[in-house]
Length: 115
Length: 114
Image (tube, rainbow over all chains, first blue to last red; front, side, top):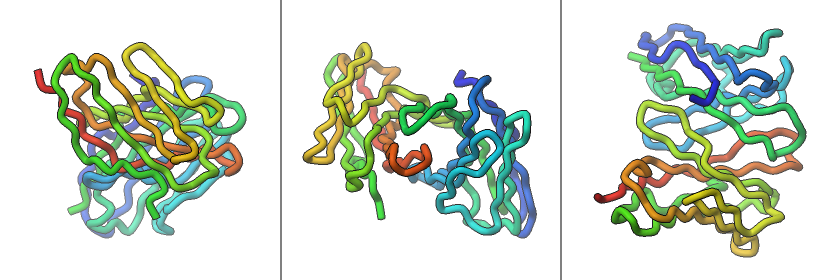
């Protein structure tokens, strides 16, 4: 158990809909990251938040947005969903500190299916 | 542009033998590398990491080797056990990027044959 929790575990919805994925980081971690894994592919970085502020953006679509709340949990909002958005969405968190030596610990993921 | 590459999508190894998983990268600004193991329906689990100031890091049965000049790293698992069967991802980050995002390879599916 990594200590990172994600809800829901599974989500099935229709094209054009909007969903919200939730992530609670490990206790004490200030950074939250969102990654997308499409079928049989590597994980693609979407966005990072550090202590409530956006820190880095990857290949995140304009239809997607995220935020980190004062209690440090994060939500990823996906809107106008398309079939191609079906994927596993992972959240990760890391210990506060500088630079790239912070190991990221991953949650179990949310499997999104768009029909 | 695939900056981190795992060219072997799958690997089968006999139980008790050595498993060697390979990873190549193209961005010379990467200075921290990690290996994650992933079982189906679970999130990636951190295995081992290495900083670019080192060329080897060992943790139990797992050893990671880094060859900076070749931009290549490898994960050795000795001896291999059935529970090691999983997908292994190589990942990299750079301390000069201003963030800690990880760039992942596409993974290698390791199967340990009893």
